[in-house]
Length: 444
Image (cartoon, rainbow, N blue to C red; front, side, top):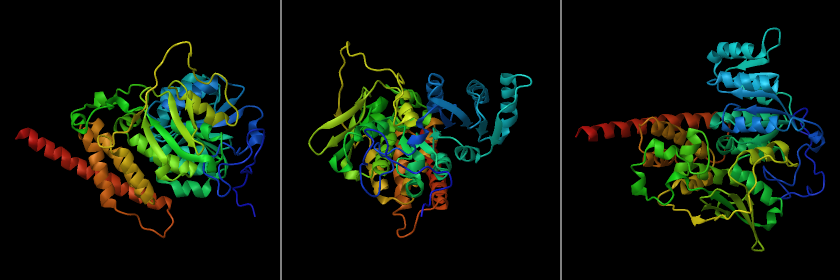
């Protein structure tokens, strides 16, 4: 009996170079050998972009506009803080639907759309409210690009999977906090990873089967503080932490890169996507950010995926797979000399990866607690309420207080939300304690 949602295409293996998966049964969440919907590859693919005014969204729109014969955007979603940009995107792409999370942004959005479209031209449908992106993710399209930042992307991820859409996943948090929920819904080949590291692993894994893989090697730039000791990190400022040496990203992701929490999350994500044990996932520091990740095979060979730092390449993999999009991103100029360096991770100065491994092995609601506490601590750091080292110190304490999740029960969305709520509350309490202590020490 086929239990797929109505309209969900049957995963098939099609075309030269797409036979066989990395594993026989069950298939990992992301498998470059499997094509979820090869029949829909003819003509322009209808795409919904969630988080369209953010970094991933704006770069995806640039890619779409340069490839109108390959992609057609039918819907856009955003938080609602940049309605002028959202209206411009909607008009330029001629989308059917626009969604905003903030209902109070609707009047300004409608006014901006009216200005863009002009008199007599029909406006796109507007969805509003905290569930707007979730509703949009289930609308008729081929691919949903989830570029939302944070665990609020979980519900749209689940909606897209349940509706039978191909999911181009840039929202790592939804997989990390809701791994079992995503696994229960996703069909073989339905998820294409968009994070640069996981898009790199995805491409390199196409060279072999799962039994050929010895380890996954996830690269890290090292952020702006590579080479500093834990003591030296105590005095860094918000401005220092936002000055990433190779990538231009939003503030939360940039801080996560500085603490290497981002890399810890990516280790959990790699484990969930590719069904590789944690002890076979390694992190190596690569300051140039040219090699985005590597796969080491059992014969001793290592395949690396490399491009200049630019997210349009991974986005193109997410939207176009199994086909590549010509000139999606810049290539290397091999006529110029360059040096590529690799260093071991300093786990004492940057304990986030080790903590993430521990959390990932605990499973259950532990990853949700880790992620939610970190989001609160990053916000506190950005507002001046927590020192840089205080981010991981507080997150570690919250994770420790949460303890080992209950075993023997299935994870539910309610479990995730409850764990996140507790973690956010506890992180804020600890942050306030730190702030009070700092104020007392300043007065002394």
